[in-house]
Length: 125
Image (tube, rainbow, N blue to C red):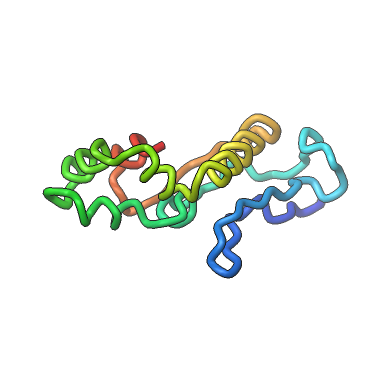
């Protein structure tokens, strides 16, 4: 039985935040030929999906450091500020492409794990 290559990783090289896709099946250029047994990929949110730490960014401007305070602070954040937290438009598009490839081409479920607040993460996405 063949092993899977490392699925995909957010690559940090000299503090750059580039997303790199890896083919799942070592012997195929077509991701639909995936024989990999991976069914779930779990990502951390802050500084993995985002390039900077959203929780800490919001903590500095939140009236309170609870879910409601952070949700309120996020709702006050300008779109370009949030885009910057995700690493800019090019990085956001690369992440979207990467996630869609895993879900649509490889039938892999994605999940997010974080110490941050669920509603804040959902709203940011």
